[in-house]
Length: 471
Ligand code: F0G
Image 1 (cartoon, rainbow, N blue to C red):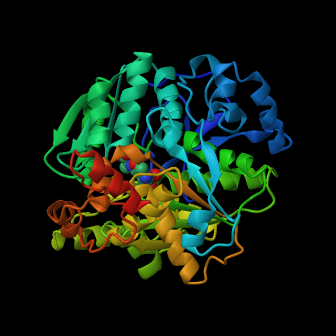
Image 2 (cartoon, rainbow, N blue to C red):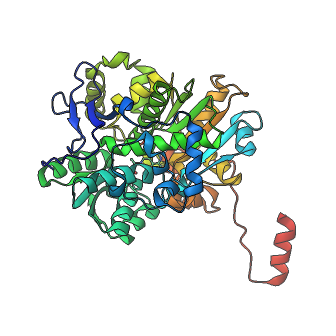
């Protein structure tokens, strides 16, 4: 979209992430990269001119006004910390009503002391994943500048979220790009049901991402992928709600799955700003967990030693790595389809987050992901495979001694349990062919925590016997 619109929010602007460039742009411009150097953009604020709360506890007052949509939203009740939009332009559908659930069962699995593990369940969002936090923010910006069509490439959750905001508000038409056969039925069904124009590209997420950038540029369609810096403003609020759930105490660790690296980048920015504003006195450490079959960040950060380096990033390292991937025809491949991504668009911003939060990156196998997912399910909320990477990663970090048993740890459960029933049913199945077809092909060999259905004849005596034998 070429046009630019002046907003009445003068204290917010867009700024290139690269310190040696630092170009700034009006909030009314629609950009997904710096026009000067091509780098990622941040939303920046002139905090001195803005009414920032003196303590985070001040946000509690919003609860008593939760009949007002902007106070009820788990994103917009923190509007003071993402003040880029005038209130009358905000599009909210009640996102962010999430819970921070303590789980001693999963804590034991990870190797933590009782009381030390919390699961931030983002599956409770209206479209069933954390994406709604970011979508309400990007959608609000799109509405502010008068967009009529909005697009994204997706592994399924971003598209479900965009489709939902379009369906509810009727302000825009959703155009979504998905890799054919690459998204779970739960997510595809949402896009179709909510009325999105759904383009199934013969390729994977990385292909779809490239195409949607070209198409949105050519047709002037508003792009809501997380290269859109407004998306990440909304996703900062996941961390505000984590702090709120801990009575504003900073935990020792935040552990999050890494795909396109939007969440981790947003979390880093959230803590950087809270620290600058004097609203917290320390930042937590960040654990970002890749699937082993889609491990670009792990390779570049842990193996190759790439660092933020005050913004002086070795730009060739990622390019060389991608060239290697192409040469060897290596595509991302994991049962955690949400994070089946080899070219994470927020890589550079994520390096900054790792720097701010003294972060570490780990890779976990599909076997580890599914076992962790079964444990999350067995102890309560359940989640989709990608989300369980956080728990599998925390277990790994605990086994290594990087996370101590006494550390207070928050794992982000990014998506709802019902998003991908195929993987769940295959894990618990008694049908070996089904297991091999869905999971065996991905190197999963066991289902240690399977809860198998009991087949029984339609006969009262046999049903009674089956119950007595199994309970
Ligand atoms: N977990 C879930 C459930 C996701 O859907 C995604 C990303 C991630 C984790 C990774 O988050 O990209 O911020 O590192 N899904 C995107 C999508 C790519 O299209 O729905 P990230």
